[in-house]
Image (tube, rainbow, N blue to C red; front, top):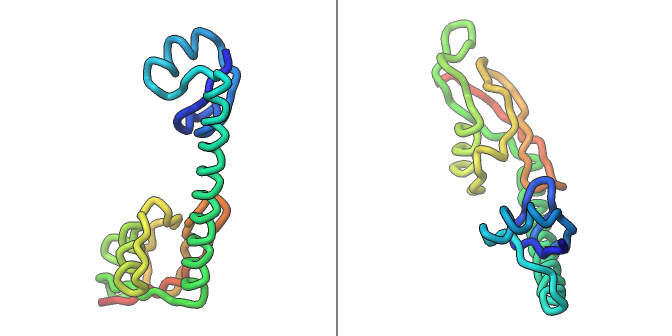
Length: 147
């Protein structure tokens, strides 16, 4: 059965795609939950407009992510944490701490889930990866100091 997807569904397709799924999957799962609707000629036109809107939104999101990455490229973010005499931290600096530091020092609100970093357990210079978009990643220079 051909259906038009109303939302992104893992393993099936993205919003606005016309996909061919089994009759049972469409009838028992996708249609009752409102995740898809039958692909009639009018629905195909609606799917095309949904795809165009999705493409425009993705382009805008990618450009915004590239702008943010450009702002962060040459910046060093300083994070203050409690540390012992040898420079080992009491606890660790997590992705949430990095996201908070980005918002306070750079004025950029970032979800902690977009920060890719192992917990930092020592003072000094470190790097973290910021995944702003599926196509845009940037490295963040971090300086952890004892405080």
